Amino acid sequence: MNDPVMFGDHPGTIDVPAEAGSLVIGEGRVLHAARANKSNNRRTLLLGWYARPNTTPDYWREEVPEPIVKRPKNKVYEGTRVPGKYLI
Image (cartoon, rainbow, N blue to C red):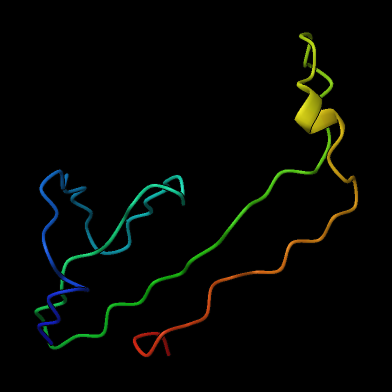
C-alpha cells in the first residue's frame, strides 16, 4: 500500500527507531505516525490511553486556575475517534 496521506513525509519528521517487541510511549496529542510496513508480515499495534482523574493533585501548592476550579466535576466527554478503513 502506498497511500500518500497515510505514509507521507512531514518536513519536521523525527524517526524513533524501535525493534520488534519494543514499547514506545508518547504524548497522544503530538502528531505521530508510523512508516509503511514493507514486509509481508502483519505489524500489530497495541494502543492504550490513560486519563488522570478530574481532581487537583494533593501535591499542588499553587493557586488552582479559575477555569479548572469552575469546570464541571462530573462532565463526561464523548470520544471523537471513529476507526477508519485501515483499522481492523
